[in-house]
Amino acid sequence: MGRISRAEASFDKLKELNPYVEVSMHTGDVTEEVLKHFDVVLFTDYHNKEDLIKWNNFCRSQKTPIGFIWASSLGLYGFIFVDFGDKFTSYDADGIKPVNCGIKHITKDAPCEIYTCDKHGLYDDAVILIKDVEG
Image (cartoon, rainbow, N blue to C red; front, side, top):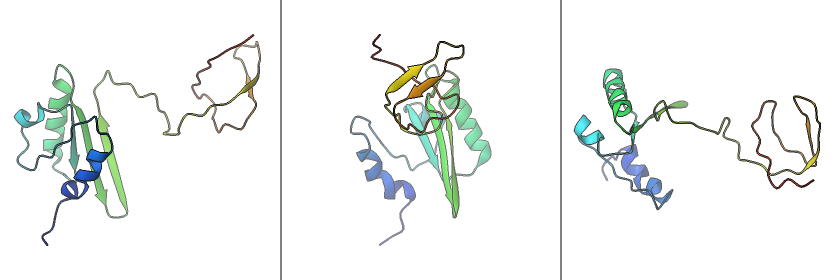
């Protein structure tokens, strides 16, 4: 059995993550003509810095920016670089799943203090959404 790339080894599992997303793999030369047909491109274990910068700049320059992801695994550590353009906003500051929590009391001070009924694991300056308010 021949050696296969990480892209080939992970392709089927990546497709399973979301059945509503079309996933394809390109193994040939990367050009702007190839990139412009995608909404998001992912480069794995590619380390030609000049090419990566050129392709990232091309993706950012499109009328609808193309999401650019560069990821690599280097033995004991790895990294990921993500660029979805200047207008992309991520509301997930820390990767922690949202929690639901009952509120016991909110002070009228400015800034207010919120006392909860349950342990929540939130941190200072966390963004919270309050809904279903009664009273």
